[in-house]
Length: 562
Image (cartoon, rainbow, N blue to C red; front, side):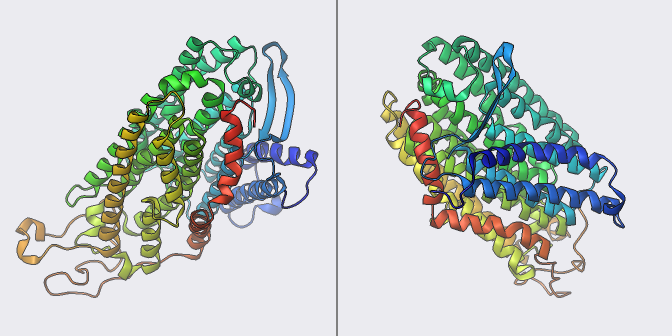
């Protein structure tokens, strides 16, 4: 069944266009604009170019999804297979199935929303031309990662995103951006070198780099020792990008320093590349090696769930001077832990849960980073004590729509039933309760208990954030020391009219009315509404996504046999 009937040749063109168009758009962004398109402001012209290119890619992705045969989601569709380097049997092999299609559409959507947001709110930094070009190169590399079906092409696309993200952090980021950018590039490059060795080992030992042929063979052409070495090497590279505890330490620094759109793309898209590699390459190509390492992967995953939640609780407590962007970054470590736990079960239920959690995390955390960026723009800081303290950042009273949307995103992130975050976590825990044959049930049921405890910690820190940022807080006057009664300084400009004001309900006389903040701007509403709406749709109608992924996962785990 297809929504619209599209010929195979047009489907091939659409997929190739989706991968190549952003790269061509990046080159065009660096060229002088034609006289008729310059307009009054050259900077706005190039930003408009970014919106146009990413919008065209999104439309093509939606049409591709509409033409996808939903009755056969396990079959590779829109395939292109052209010889590129005959000596190494490297081919330009593209295609999509029910696993890669949702990630392709998610990437196109988030990049378009980031381009649209940047048109109205460009981060401070060098030339807008370079900014637009880097975002487009980043989009092309990410889309290619989800579309290519050759191991070496996968590696090239996987690496293609590193340099654009490095410069987005280093040149358009905030405080400590140089150190954060270097940490990001060093961690990911070192992981990639090890991953390349594993990919070459698989290709040379099996005689092909074709991911479809390797998945169909299901590891029968590789000895167990080769599979174990390959999973260790490739898994380390993918784990850094995911990121898996304890290889996660680059992520909080990168998110804290990155501009808003950089954080959205990093959390919503780049982290998915690592988990996608586990599902697309390691599970079907090296099942014996994965079975060897699955208990360890699950153990690291649940440690990451609890660790990320405890780090968020530490940042959220009063007096910790925690950064809200950093808190959301640590929450990603926990959420991606659920994805890794689902993959480690090696069951259709667990892997489907992991893929669902991937999409849910992209929607919800992308929305959270947009909202935190908007709050930081308004207050000049993302420091939680400043937002919740004497400066009175009670969003419900001062910017009610912004506060309500932040509360919505927070409860979606903690896994509230009826929203997208719930299904991924639930399915991964169900999968871990009954792992694949050969895996220790007592061990995995212990992991279920730890993961379930992590969901309680997630609810705790998210509700603390909502209470402090949306409602504000102020200690009773009689319990404040003289030093605490002194006005707090912020890391940025004080909101207009905030001097001398106190939040509603605070002790002491009010010297001024509580100042109002700018609520959600129209361009913000346009950029954020799709993410909120899809979070609800995926939560109420999970069969839309699971109907795509489940047949493909079943076939992948069965070695190409339905």
